[in-house]
Length: 124
Image (cartoon, rainbow, N blue to C red):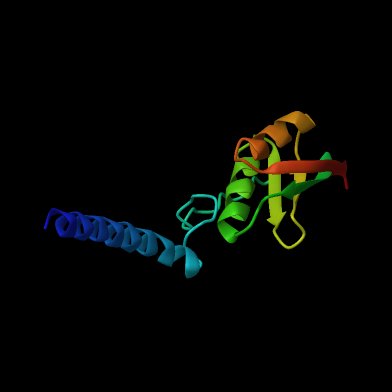
């Protein structure tokens, strides 16, 4: 008798775990959840309007898998004063226009702090 009760308890626990796993996965499969742990509803920060563009850099980035990833990277770059960035997920890159002199390490840190890998930064 106690073996049957134990089996029923284990089955109930497994069903509950499966239920919550599927429930949390459904938004991801519909493209609403981010693979990077985001909600998929992060608002895009408008790039700053620069009075003068002193340089344009192309930042190659690995690890962006979805639109939420692209938004997160673009928002992080655009939060740097003097940056106007646009991320192209198909090319796995960000085109970064600079309104002031910004060290490549600052750009790289903004991306790597999110968990992505910067493979190169070049002047366009």
